[in-house]
Amino acid sequence: MKNPDQQNSPASDDDVVAERVRIFDTSLRDGEQAPGFSMDRRAKLRMAQQLESLGVDILEAGFPQASPDDFAAVAEIAGTLKHTTVCALARCQDGDIDSAARALQSACHSRIHLFLSTSPLHREHKLGMSKAQVLDTAVRAIERARGLCHEVEFSAEDALRTEPEFLVEIFSAAVAAGATTLNAPDTVGYTTPTEIVELFEYLRRHVRGADRVVFSSHCHDDLGMAVANSLAAVSAGARQVECTINGIGERAGNAALEEVVMALKVRAPHFGVDTRIDTRQLYPTSRLLTELTGQAVPRNKAIVGANAFAHESGIHQHGMLKHRGTYEIMRPQDVGIAETSLVMGKHSGRAALRQRLQVMGYTPDDAALDEIFTRFKTLADHGRELHDEDLEALALGHDPHAGGPWHLVQLHANSHLGGSASASVKLAHDDGHQIGEAAIGDGPVDAVLRAIERATGTPLELTRFQIDALGEGADAQGHAQLSARHAARDWRGHGSSTDIVEAAALAALVIVNRIERQTPATAAAVKQARGVTA
Image (cartoon, rainbow, N blue to C red; front, side, top):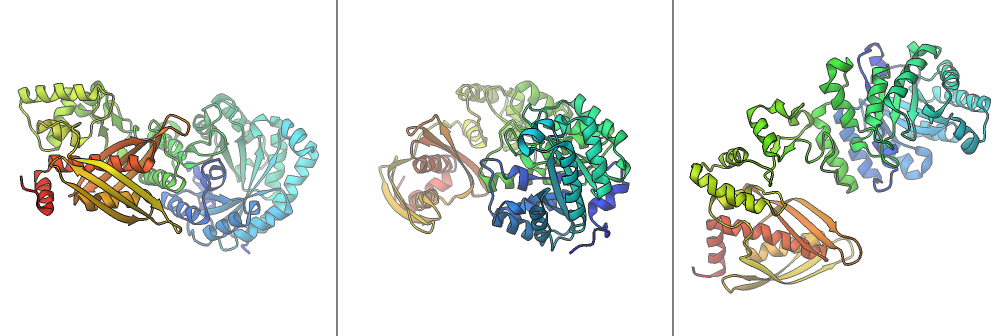
Protein backbone atom coordinates (compact mmCIF):
# COMPACT_ATOMS: atom_id res chain seq x y z
CA MET A 1 0.00 0.00 0.00
CA LYS A 2 1.20 3.52 -0.76
CA ASN A 3 2.78 5.64 1.97
CA PRO A 4 0.75 8.86 2.29
CA ASP A 5 3.88 10.72 3.36
CA GLN A 6 5.30 10.24 -0.16
CA GLN A 7 3.59 13.28 -1.62
CA ASN A 8 4.69 12.51 -5.16
CA SER A 9 1.51 12.99 -7.17
CA PRO A 10 1.29 15.69 -9.85
CA ALA A 11 -1.32 17.52 -7.79
CA SER A 12 0.98 17.59 -4.76
CA ASP A 13 3.93 18.79 -6.84
CA ASP A 14 1.81 21.69 -8.09
CA ASP A 15 0.80 22.92 -4.63
CA VAL A 16 3.39 25.68 -4.81
CA VAL A 17 2.01 26.95 -8.13
CA ALA A 18 -0.80 29.19 -6.90
CA GLU A 19 -1.85 30.14 -10.42
CA ARG A 20 -2.49 26.52 -11.42
CA VAL A 21 -6.08 25.28 -11.31
CA ARG A 22 -6.32 21.50 -11.10
CA ILE A 23 -8.88 19.87 -13.35
CA PHE A 24 -10.69 17.02 -11.61
CA ASP A 25 -12.64 15.02 -14.20
CA THR A 26 -15.56 12.97 -12.96
CA SER A 27 -17.00 11.90 -16.32
CA LEU A 28 -16.47 8.25 -15.40
CA ARG A 29 -18.21 8.57 -12.03
CA ASP A 30 -20.72 11.41 -11.70
CA GLY A 31 -21.14 11.68 -15.46
CA GLU A 32 -21.35 7.95 -16.16
CA GLN A 33 -24.05 7.35 -13.57
CA ALA A 34 -26.47 9.67 -15.40
CA PRO A 35 -29.16 7.92 -17.47
CA GLY A 36 -27.97 7.27 -21.03
CA PHE A 37 -24.24 7.57 -20.28
CA SER A 38 -23.41 4.20 -18.74
CA MET A 39 -20.14 2.69 -19.98
CA ASP A 40 -18.70 -0.80 -19.69
CA ARG A 41 -15.19 -1.48 -18.43
CA ARG A 42 -13.59 -1.40 -21.89
CA ALA A 43 -15.21 1.95 -22.70
CA LYS A 44 -14.18 3.39 -19.34
CA LEU A 45 -10.55 2.44 -19.92
CA ARG A 46 -10.53 4.02 -23.40
CA MET A 47 -12.02 7.19 -22.00
CA ALA A 48 -9.58 7.24 -19.08
CA GLN A 49 -6.59 6.97 -21.41
CA GLN A 50 -7.92 9.84 -23.51
CA LEU A 51 -8.50 11.95 -20.41
CA GLU A 52 -4.87 11.39 -19.39
CA SER A 53 -3.81 12.52 -22.90
CA LEU A 54 -6.03 15.55 -22.41
CA GLY A 55 -4.04 16.38 -19.29
CA VAL A 56 -6.56 16.14 -16.47
CA ASP A 57 -4.86 16.31 -13.08
CA ILE A 58 -7.24 13.99 -11.23
CA LEU A 59 -9.55 11.40 -12.77
CA GLU A 60 -12.39 10.05 -10.66
CA ALA A 61 -12.61 6.55 -12.10
CA GLY A 62 -15.68 5.32 -10.25
CA PHE A 63 -17.30 4.15 -7.02
CA PRO A 64 -15.68 0.75 -6.27
CA GLN A 65 -18.19 -0.28 -3.63
CA ALA A 66 -21.10 0.26 -6.03
CA SER A 67 -20.58 -2.97 -8.01
CA PRO A 68 -17.93 -5.57 -8.90
CA ASP A 69 -17.70 -4.11 -12.41
CA ASP A 70 -17.12 -0.61 -11.07
CA PHE A 71 -14.40 -1.97 -8.77
CA ALA A 72 -12.74 -3.77 -11.68
CA ALA A 73 -12.89 -0.67 -13.87
CA VAL A 74 -11.25 1.51 -11.20
CA ALA A 75 -8.57 -1.12 -10.61
CA GLU A 76 -7.79 -1.45 -14.33
CA ILE A 77 -7.60 2.32 -14.80
CA ALA A 78 -5.43 2.66 -11.69
CA GLY A 79 -2.97 0.15 -13.11
CA THR A 80 -2.86 1.83 -16.52
CA LEU A 81 -2.51 5.58 -15.99
CA LYS A 82 0.98 6.92 -15.29
CA HIS A 83 0.67 10.66 -14.82
CA THR A 84 -2.91 11.44 -13.81
CA THR A 85 -3.97 10.91 -10.20
CA VAL A 86 -6.60 8.16 -10.11
CA CYS A 87 -9.40 8.82 -7.63
CA ALA A 88 -12.08 6.51 -6.20
CA LEU A 89 -15.26 7.70 -4.50
CA ALA A 90 -16.23 6.39 -1.08
CA ARG A 91 -18.84 7.11 1.54
CA CYS A 92 -17.54 7.68 5.05
CA GLN A 93 -17.92 3.97 5.78
CA ASP A 94 -15.17 1.43 6.45
CA GLY A 95 -16.31 -0.95 3.71
CA ASP A 96 -16.33 1.81 1.09
CA ILE A 97 -12.92 3.09 2.12
CA ASP A 98 -11.28 -0.34 2.13
CA SER A 99 -12.83 -1.19 -1.24
CA ALA A 100 -11.54 2.07 -2.74
CA ALA A 101 -8.07 1.42 -1.34
CA ARG A 102 -7.94 -2.08 -2.82
CA ALA A 103 -9.05 -0.80 -6.22
CA LEU A 104 -6.32 1.87 -6.14
CA GLN A 105 -3.49 -0.42 -5.03
CA SER A 106 -1.61 -0.31 -8.34
CA ALA A 107 -2.06 3.43 -8.97
CA CYS A 108 1.07 5.53 -9.40
CA HIS A 109 -0.86 8.42 -7.82
CA SER A 110 -3.97 7.64 -5.79
CA ARG A 111 -6.73 9.60 -4.07
CA ILE A 112 -9.73 8.51 -2.03
CA HIS A 113 -12.63 10.93 -2.33
CA LEU A 114 -14.82 10.82 0.79
CA PHE A 115 -18.19 12.50 0.91
CA LEU A 116 -20.78 13.10 3.63
CA SER A 117 -23.89 15.26 3.64
CA THR A 118 -23.69 18.38 5.81
CA SER A 119 -26.78 20.51 5.06
CA PRO A 120 -29.65 20.63 7.57
CA LEU A 121 -32.00 19.04 5.03
CA HIS A 122 -29.63 16.12 4.39
CA ARG A 123 -28.67 15.71 8.04
CA GLU A 124 -32.31 15.35 9.07
CA HIS A 125 -33.92 13.49 6.17
CA LYS A 126 -31.06 11.55 4.56
CA LEU A 127 -28.69 10.72 7.41
CA GLY A 128 -30.71 11.15 10.60
CA MET A 129 -27.55 12.54 12.25
CA SER A 130 -26.70 15.50 14.43
CA LYS A 131 -23.91 17.93 13.58
CA ALA A 132 -21.64 16.21 16.10
CA GLN A 133 -22.30 12.78 14.58
CA VAL A 134 -21.60 14.06 11.07
CA LEU A 135 -18.34 15.65 12.20
CA ASP A 136 -17.16 12.54 14.08
CA THR A 137 -18.03 10.28 11.13
CA ALA A 138 -16.08 12.47 8.71
CA VAL A 139 -12.99 12.63 10.91
CA ARG A 140 -12.87 8.86 11.50
CA ALA A 141 -13.21 8.19 7.77
CA ILE A 142 -10.47 10.65 6.79
CA GLU A 143 -8.09 9.19 9.37
CA ARG A 144 -8.75 5.68 8.07
CA ALA A 145 -8.32 6.65 4.41
CA ARG A 146 -5.21 8.71 5.06
CA GLY A 147 -3.07 5.62 5.56
CA LEU A 148 -4.38 3.85 2.46
CA CYS A 149 -3.61 6.26 -0.41
CA HIS A 150 -1.50 9.25 -1.40
CA GLU A 151 -4.21 11.89 -0.96
CA VAL A 152 -7.60 12.27 0.68
CA GLU A 153 -10.31 14.59 -0.55
CA PHE A 154 -13.32 15.41 1.62
CA SER A 155 -16.59 16.65 0.14
CA ALA A 156 -19.33 18.23 2.22
CA GLU A 157 -22.31 17.12 0.16
CA ASP A 158 -24.86 19.91 -0.35
CA ALA A 159 -22.30 22.39 0.98
CA LEU A 160 -23.99 25.40 -0.60
CA ARG A 161 -27.09 24.80 1.55
CA THR A 162 -25.04 24.13 4.69
CA GLU A 163 -24.57 26.68 7.48
CA PRO A 164 -21.23 28.42 6.73
CA GLU A 165 -20.18 28.13 10.38
CA PHE A 166 -20.65 24.36 10.33
CA LEU A 167 -18.74 24.09 7.06
CA VAL A 168 -15.82 25.89 8.70
CA GLU A 169 -16.02 23.53 11.67
CA ILE A 170 -16.10 20.29 9.66
CA PHE A 171 -13.50 21.50 7.12
CA SER A 172 -11.13 22.52 9.92
CA ALA A 173 -11.53 19.07 11.46
CA ALA A 174 -10.97 17.47 8.03
CA VAL A 175 -7.66 19.32 7.60
CA ALA A 176 -6.51 18.23 11.06
CA ALA A 177 -7.46 14.63 10.23
CA GLY A 178 -5.35 14.62 7.06
CA ALA A 179 -7.51 15.75 4.14
CA THR A 180 -5.51 17.47 1.38
CA THR A 181 -8.45 18.77 -0.71
CA LEU A 182 -11.70 20.29 0.57
CA ASN A 183 -14.65 20.24 -1.82
CA ALA A 184 -17.68 22.49 -1.34
CA PRO A 185 -20.12 21.15 -3.95
CA ASP A 186 -23.28 22.81 -5.18
CA THR A 187 -24.92 19.40 -5.26
CA VAL A 188 -28.30 20.57 -6.56
CA GLY A 189 -27.23 23.49 -8.77
CA TYR A 190 -28.90 26.01 -6.48
CA THR A 191 -26.36 28.77 -5.89
CA THR A 192 -25.37 31.88 -7.85
CA PRO A 193 -21.91 33.26 -8.73
CA THR A 194 -22.16 36.00 -6.11
CA GLU A 195 -23.08 33.54 -3.36
CA ILE A 196 -20.34 31.06 -4.23
CA VAL A 197 -17.72 33.81 -4.21
CA GLU A 198 -18.84 34.87 -0.74
CA LEU A 199 -18.73 31.28 0.55
CA PHE A 200 -15.25 30.43 -0.79
CA GLU A 201 -13.80 33.68 0.48
CA TYR A 202 -15.37 33.00 3.89
CA LEU A 203 -14.00 29.45 4.00
CA ARG A 204 -10.49 30.51 3.03
CA ARG A 205 -10.52 33.14 5.80
CA HIS A 206 -11.89 30.95 8.59
CA VAL A 207 -10.96 27.28 7.99
CA ARG A 208 -7.98 26.39 10.19
CA GLY A 209 -5.11 25.15 8.03
CA ALA A 210 -6.65 26.60 4.86
CA ASP A 211 -3.18 27.43 3.53
CA ARG A 212 -2.26 23.71 3.57
CA VAL A 213 -5.12 22.43 1.42
CA VAL A 214 -6.68 22.93 -1.99
CA PHE A 215 -10.26 24.22 -2.09
CA SER A 216 -12.40 22.62 -4.76
CA SER A 217 -15.61 23.48 -6.59
CA HIS A 218 -18.14 20.95 -7.90
CA CYS A 219 -21.19 22.58 -9.49
CA HIS A 220 -24.32 21.06 -10.99
CA ASP A 221 -26.27 22.72 -13.77
CA ASP A 222 -29.88 22.61 -12.60
CA LEU A 223 -30.28 26.37 -13.11
CA GLY A 224 -27.81 26.55 -15.99
CA MET A 225 -25.07 28.20 -13.93
CA ALA A 226 -22.59 25.37 -13.30
CA VAL A 227 -19.78 26.84 -15.42
CA ALA A 228 -20.40 30.39 -14.21
CA ASN A 229 -20.40 29.22 -10.59
CA SER A 230 -17.22 27.18 -11.10
CA LEU A 231 -15.43 30.19 -12.59
CA ALA A 232 -16.69 32.37 -9.74
CA ALA A 233 -15.25 29.88 -7.26
CA VAL A 234 -11.89 30.07 -9.04
CA SER A 235 -11.96 33.86 -8.79
CA ALA A 236 -12.55 33.40 -5.03
CA GLY A 237 -9.53 31.13 -4.59
CA ALA A 238 -10.68 27.63 -5.52
CA ARG A 239 -7.77 25.82 -7.15
CA GLN A 240 -9.55 22.65 -8.21
CA VAL A 241 -12.62 22.44 -10.44
CA GLU A 242 -14.61 19.21 -10.66
CA CYS A 243 -16.23 18.86 -14.06
CA THR A 244 -17.12 16.47 -16.88
CA ILE A 245 -16.67 16.22 -20.65
CA ASN A 246 -19.70 17.70 -22.44
CA GLY A 247 -21.09 18.59 -18.99
CA ILE A 248 -22.65 15.14 -18.48
CA GLY A 249 -23.91 14.19 -15.05
CA GLU A 250 -26.90 13.79 -12.77
CA ARG A 251 -30.08 15.61 -13.83
CA ALA A 252 -29.02 18.65 -15.93
CA GLY A 253 -25.36 17.67 -15.61
CA ASN A 254 -22.14 19.16 -14.25
CA ALA A 255 -19.90 22.05 -15.18
CA ALA A 256 -18.55 21.28 -18.65
CA LEU A 257 -14.80 20.74 -18.56
CA GLU A 258 -14.22 22.19 -22.02
CA GLU A 259 -16.12 25.38 -21.16
CA VAL A 260 -14.31 25.94 -17.87
CA VAL A 261 -10.89 25.31 -19.39
CA MET A 262 -11.41 27.54 -22.43
CA ALA A 263 -12.88 30.33 -20.31
CA LEU A 264 -9.74 30.27 -18.16
CA LYS A 265 -7.58 30.21 -21.30
CA VAL A 266 -9.37 32.86 -23.36
CA ARG A 267 -9.85 35.16 -20.36
CA ALA A 268 -6.45 34.42 -18.80
CA PRO A 269 -5.70 38.11 -18.05
CA HIS A 270 -8.98 38.31 -16.12
CA PHE A 271 -8.61 35.11 -14.06
CA GLY A 272 -4.81 35.07 -13.76
CA VAL A 273 -4.67 31.26 -13.62
CA ASP A 274 -3.91 28.38 -15.96
CA THR A 275 -4.48 24.63 -16.32
CA ARG A 276 -2.31 21.85 -17.71
CA ILE A 277 -5.01 20.77 -20.19
CA ASP A 278 -3.93 20.25 -23.82
CA THR A 279 -6.89 22.12 -25.26
CA ARG A 280 -6.26 20.65 -28.72
CA GLN A 281 -7.56 17.37 -27.29
CA LEU A 282 -10.91 18.81 -26.17
CA TYR A 283 -12.85 18.10 -29.37
CA PRO A 284 -11.38 14.59 -29.88
CA THR A 285 -12.24 13.78 -26.25
CA SER A 286 -15.78 15.04 -26.69
CA ARG A 287 -16.17 12.96 -29.86
CA LEU A 288 -14.87 9.83 -28.11
CA LEU A 289 -17.46 10.24 -25.35
CA THR A 290 -20.17 10.52 -28.00
CA GLU A 291 -18.86 7.38 -29.69
CA LEU A 292 -18.76 5.39 -26.46
CA THR A 293 -22.17 6.43 -25.14
CA GLY A 294 -24.10 7.05 -28.35
CA GLN A 295 -25.27 10.39 -26.94
CA ALA A 296 -24.89 13.21 -29.46
CA VAL A 297 -23.66 16.68 -28.51
CA PRO A 298 -26.21 19.46 -29.19
CA ARG A 299 -25.23 21.54 -32.23
CA ASN A 300 -25.23 24.74 -30.17
CA LYS A 301 -23.03 23.30 -27.39
CA ALA A 302 -20.24 25.73 -26.51
CA ILE A 303 -16.67 24.81 -27.57
CA VAL A 304 -17.39 21.35 -29.05
CA GLY A 305 -20.83 21.63 -30.69
CA ALA A 306 -21.14 21.49 -34.48
CA ASN A 307 -22.12 25.18 -34.57
CA ALA A 308 -19.40 26.42 -32.19
CA PHE A 309 -17.18 27.49 -35.11
CA ALA A 310 -19.80 27.58 -37.87
CA HIS A 311 -21.26 30.72 -39.44
CA GLU A 312 -24.26 30.91 -41.78
CA SER A 313 -25.33 34.54 -41.48
CA GLY A 314 -24.15 36.56 -44.47
CA ILE A 315 -23.16 39.44 -42.18
CA HIS A 316 -21.09 37.14 -39.99
CA GLN A 317 -19.53 35.37 -42.96
CA HIS A 318 -18.55 38.69 -44.53
CA GLY A 319 -16.92 39.75 -41.27
CA MET A 320 -15.10 36.42 -40.92
CA LEU A 321 -13.73 36.72 -44.45
CA LYS A 322 -12.33 40.13 -43.55
CA HIS A 323 -10.92 39.19 -40.12
CA ARG A 324 -11.50 36.09 -38.00
CA GLY A 325 -11.57 38.12 -34.80
CA THR A 326 -14.79 39.85 -35.80
CA TYR A 327 -16.90 36.91 -34.65
CA GLU A 328 -14.56 34.34 -33.07
CA ILE A 329 -12.85 34.79 -29.70
CA MET A 330 -10.76 31.61 -30.07
CA ARG A 331 -9.37 29.55 -32.92
CA PRO A 332 -11.05 26.23 -33.73
CA GLN A 333 -7.57 24.66 -33.88
CA ASP A 334 -7.12 25.53 -30.19
CA VAL A 335 -9.78 22.99 -29.25
CA GLY A 336 -8.90 20.37 -31.87
CA ILE A 337 -11.30 21.38 -34.66
CA ALA A 338 -9.66 21.62 -38.08
CA GLU A 339 -11.11 24.93 -39.23
CA THR A 340 -13.95 27.39 -39.09
CA SER A 341 -16.95 26.40 -41.19
CA LEU A 342 -18.85 28.92 -43.27
CA VAL A 343 -22.13 27.05 -43.52
CA MET A 344 -23.89 27.61 -46.81
CA GLY A 345 -27.58 28.16 -46.15
CA LYS A 346 -30.37 30.61 -46.80
CA HIS A 347 -28.70 33.30 -44.67
CA SER A 348 -25.39 33.14 -46.56
CA GLY A 349 -24.28 35.99 -48.80
CA ARG A 350 -22.69 36.33 -52.22
CA ALA A 351 -19.18 36.89 -50.82
CA ALA A 352 -19.22 33.61 -48.89
CA LEU A 353 -20.55 31.73 -51.93
CA ARG A 354 -17.81 33.15 -54.17
CA GLN A 355 -15.13 32.31 -51.60
CA ARG A 356 -16.38 28.74 -51.20
CA LEU A 357 -16.56 28.15 -54.93
CA GLN A 358 -13.00 29.49 -55.31
CA VAL A 359 -11.77 27.05 -52.65
CA MET A 360 -13.42 24.28 -54.67
CA GLY A 361 -11.66 25.45 -57.87
CA TYR A 362 -14.50 27.37 -59.54
CA THR A 363 -14.05 31.02 -60.50
CA PRO A 364 -17.28 32.19 -62.20
CA ASP A 365 -17.43 35.73 -63.55
CA ASP A 366 -19.91 38.18 -62.08
CA ALA A 367 -22.71 37.27 -64.47
CA ALA A 368 -22.30 33.54 -63.86
CA LEU A 369 -22.07 34.10 -60.12
CA ASP A 370 -25.35 36.05 -60.23
CA GLU A 371 -27.06 33.08 -61.87
CA ILE A 372 -25.50 30.58 -59.45
CA PHE A 373 -26.42 32.76 -56.47
CA THR A 374 -30.05 33.00 -57.58
CA ARG A 375 -30.32 29.21 -57.89
CA PHE A 376 -28.44 28.81 -54.61
CA LYS A 377 -30.94 31.01 -52.75
CA THR A 378 -33.86 29.11 -54.25
CA LEU A 379 -32.46 25.81 -53.00
CA ALA A 380 -31.40 27.19 -49.61
CA ASP A 381 -34.87 28.63 -48.98
CA HIS A 382 -36.11 25.06 -48.66
CA GLY A 383 -34.50 25.21 -45.22
CA ARG A 384 -31.52 22.92 -45.52
CA GLU A 385 -27.77 23.34 -45.45
CA LEU A 386 -26.00 23.03 -48.81
CA HIS A 387 -22.75 21.08 -48.98
CA ASP A 388 -19.85 21.16 -51.42
CA GLU A 389 -21.42 18.59 -53.72
CA ASP A 390 -24.54 20.79 -53.96
CA LEU A 391 -22.43 23.84 -54.79
CA GLU A 392 -20.46 21.91 -57.36
CA ALA A 393 -23.68 20.83 -59.06
CA LEU A 394 -24.79 24.47 -59.22
CA ALA A 395 -21.42 25.53 -60.64
CA LEU A 396 -21.72 22.83 -63.34
CA GLY A 397 -25.30 23.74 -64.15
CA HIS A 398 -26.74 20.54 -62.67
CA ASP A 399 -29.72 20.14 -60.35
CA PRO A 400 -28.54 19.10 -56.85
CA HIS A 401 -32.00 17.67 -56.14
CA ALA A 402 -32.19 15.57 -59.26
CA GLY A 403 -33.32 12.02 -58.62
CA GLY A 404 -31.55 8.95 -59.93
CA PRO A 405 -30.01 7.50 -61.87
CA TRP A 406 -30.31 4.71 -59.27
CA HIS A 407 -33.63 3.87 -57.60
CA LEU A 408 -34.38 1.37 -54.83
CA VAL A 409 -36.82 -1.36 -55.97
CA GLN A 410 -36.51 -4.02 -53.26
CA LEU A 411 -34.70 -4.34 -49.92
CA HIS A 412 -34.42 -7.24 -47.50
CA ALA A 413 -32.23 -7.31 -44.39
CA ASN A 414 -31.79 -9.96 -41.69
CA SER A 415 -29.84 -9.97 -38.44
CA HIS A 416 -28.06 -13.10 -37.25
CA LEU A 417 -26.89 -14.36 -33.88
CA GLY A 418 -23.42 -13.10 -33.07
CA GLY A 419 -23.98 -9.64 -34.48
CA SER A 420 -23.63 -10.29 -38.22
CA ALA A 421 -26.36 -9.54 -40.76
CA SER A 422 -27.18 -10.08 -44.41
CA ALA A 423 -28.98 -7.85 -46.89
CA SER A 424 -30.13 -8.00 -50.50
CA VAL A 425 -31.15 -5.11 -52.74
CA LYS A 426 -32.62 -4.70 -56.21
CA LEU A 427 -31.86 -1.41 -57.93
CA ALA A 428 -33.14 0.11 -61.13
CA HIS A 429 -31.13 2.54 -63.29
CA ASP A 430 -32.53 5.28 -65.50
CA ASP A 431 -31.03 3.51 -68.53
CA GLY A 432 -33.49 0.66 -67.98
CA HIS A 433 -31.00 -1.71 -66.37
CA GLN A 434 -31.88 -3.56 -63.12
CA ILE A 435 -29.48 -5.39 -60.86
CA GLY A 436 -29.70 -7.32 -57.60
CA GLU A 437 -26.91 -7.94 -55.09
CA ALA A 438 -26.49 -9.34 -51.59
CA ALA A 439 -23.86 -8.87 -48.92
CA ILE A 440 -22.97 -9.72 -45.32
CA GLY A 441 -22.02 -7.04 -42.80
CA ASP A 442 -21.48 -6.32 -39.11
CA GLY A 443 -25.13 -5.25 -38.87
CA PRO A 444 -28.11 -4.72 -41.17
CA VAL A 445 -27.10 -1.17 -42.10
CA ASP A 446 -23.53 -2.24 -42.90
CA ALA A 447 -24.82 -5.19 -44.94
CA VAL A 448 -27.18 -3.08 -47.04
CA LEU A 449 -24.46 -0.51 -47.73
CA ARG A 450 -22.14 -3.27 -48.92
CA ALA A 451 -24.89 -4.65 -51.18
CA ILE A 452 -25.44 -1.20 -52.72
CA GLU A 453 -21.69 -0.86 -53.31
CA ARG A 454 -21.68 -4.15 -55.22
CA ALA A 455 -24.75 -3.31 -57.24
CA THR A 456 -23.60 0.16 -58.32
CA GLY A 457 -19.87 -0.51 -58.53
CA THR A 458 -19.24 2.55 -56.37
CA PRO A 459 -17.06 1.86 -53.28
CA LEU A 460 -17.85 4.00 -50.25
CA GLU A 461 -15.81 4.50 -47.08
CA LEU A 462 -18.40 5.37 -44.44
CA THR A 463 -17.16 8.20 -42.17
CA ARG A 464 -20.37 9.19 -40.37
CA PHE A 465 -23.76 7.61 -39.77
CA GLN A 466 -26.50 9.25 -37.73
CA ILE A 467 -30.16 8.37 -37.23
CA ASP A 468 -32.64 10.88 -35.81
CA ALA A 469 -36.33 10.33 -35.10
CA LEU A 470 -38.80 12.54 -36.93
CA GLY A 471 -41.85 12.55 -34.66
CA GLU A 472 -42.88 10.11 -31.94
CA GLY A 473 -44.57 6.75 -31.75
CA ALA A 474 -44.32 3.48 -33.65
CA ASP A 475 -44.95 5.16 -37.00
CA ALA A 476 -42.29 7.84 -36.54
CA GLN A 477 -39.83 8.17 -39.38
CA GLY A 478 -36.11 7.74 -38.96
CA HIS A 479 -33.91 10.29 -40.75
CA ALA A 480 -30.52 8.86 -41.76
CA GLN A 481 -27.54 11.07 -42.49
CA LEU A 482 -24.47 9.48 -44.07
CA SER A 483 -21.04 10.85 -44.87
CA ALA A 484 -18.66 8.79 -47.00
CA ARG A 485 -15.38 9.14 -48.87
CA HIS A 486 -15.04 8.18 -52.51
CA ALA A 487 -12.06 8.98 -54.73
CA ALA A 488 -10.50 11.16 -52.00
CA ARG A 489 -13.65 13.31 -51.70
CA ASP A 490 -16.29 13.60 -48.99
CA TRP A 491 -19.91 13.05 -49.96
CA ARG A 492 -23.13 13.36 -47.95
CA GLY A 493 -26.58 11.91 -48.30
CA HIS A 494 -29.80 11.67 -46.33
CA GLY A 495 -32.96 9.60 -46.43
CA SER A 496 -36.12 9.08 -44.38
CA SER A 497 -38.29 6.04 -43.72
CA THR A 498 -40.13 4.33 -40.88
CA ASP A 499 -37.49 1.57 -41.37
CA ILE A 500 -34.04 2.86 -40.37
CA VAL A 501 -32.30 0.33 -42.65
CA GLU A 502 -34.31 1.62 -45.60
CA ALA A 503 -33.53 5.20 -44.54
CA ALA A 504 -29.81 4.33 -44.58
CA ALA A 505 -30.16 2.69 -48.02
CA LEU A 506 -31.88 5.79 -49.43
CA ALA A 507 -29.15 8.02 -47.98
CA ALA A 508 -26.47 5.82 -49.55
CA LEU A 509 -28.20 6.01 -52.93
CA VAL A 510 -28.22 9.81 -52.71
CA ILE A 511 -24.43 9.67 -52.38
CA VAL A 512 -24.00 7.12 -55.19
CA ASN A 513 -26.26 9.14 -57.48
CA ARG A 514 -24.37 12.37 -56.79
CA ILE A 515 -21.08 10.65 -57.54
CA GLU A 516 -22.38 9.25 -60.82
CA ARG A 517 -24.04 12.51 -61.91
CA GLN A 518 -21.09 14.75 -61.05
CA THR A 519 -18.19 12.53 -62.12
CA PRO A 520 -18.71 11.50 -65.76
CA ALA A 521 -15.74 9.16 -65.66
CA THR A 522 -17.36 7.22 -62.85
CA ALA A 523 -20.66 6.97 -64.74
CA ALA A 524 -18.87 5.79 -67.90
CA ALA A 525 -16.90 3.18 -65.98
CA VAL A 526 -20.05 1.88 -64.31
CA LYS A 527 -21.85 1.63 -67.67
CA GLN A 528 -18.91 -0.13 -69.25
CA ALA A 529 -18.76 -2.58 -66.36
CA ARG A 530 -22.47 -3.35 -66.91
CA GLY A 531 -22.08 -3.58 -70.68
CA VAL A 532 -24.43 -0.67 -71.33
CA THR A 533 -23.65 1.58 -74.31
CA ALA A 534 -24.24 5.30 -74.29
